Length: 112
Picture (spheres, rainbow, N blue to C red):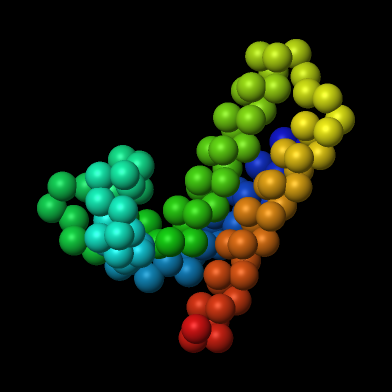
């Protein structure tokens, strides 16, 4: 599962990077206004950067999914495995996150 999903995510990252406009993810600036210091450091712009993250939002979202999946894989390895219900939950959550990114992309194409 992890190898398949990592490959899928790598493909989505490459595609998102190819379509990246180079202006960064402007949502970060809006999120900072809403969340202030509660916004995770990984999502904050670098010093002097005014457009948000250096990568586009889609690139950032898919990379975050991949990182989360890696953390779950590490947890599973450390625990010596997960029960069937936990594995199903990991699969469902991962696919839900991927569908969310694809939905954002479809809305962007529609101009919404």
